[in-house]
Amino acid sequence: MAVDKITWDRVGRVTEPGRYMYTFGWLTITAGDLEIWKRYPRAAFTLLAQRSGSHESAGEEFHLGAFDVAPDAPPAITTH
Image (cartoon, rainbow, N blue to C red):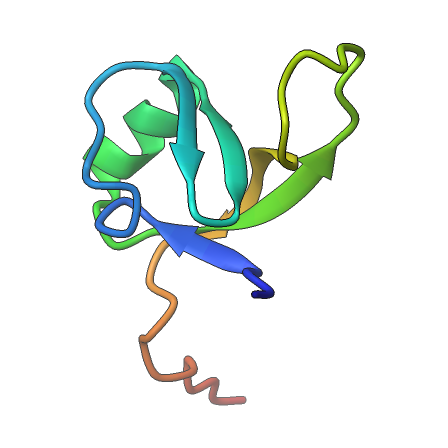
């Protein structure tokens, strides 16, 4: 399953930073990520794969990258 973007709802509206297991792999969520979601609850983050220095954990490792604050909003109209 390819996952490009992820929302706060999709991760169960977690409230604490940490490392969480999802169907696509492990996701590390930082305090900064949570602050963005608290300010923009509909923000969608890009999932970024990260290399794990340890072979202890099975599955892929991800962290959150760039985000859209209103991913389903219509495009802005500009006038000249």
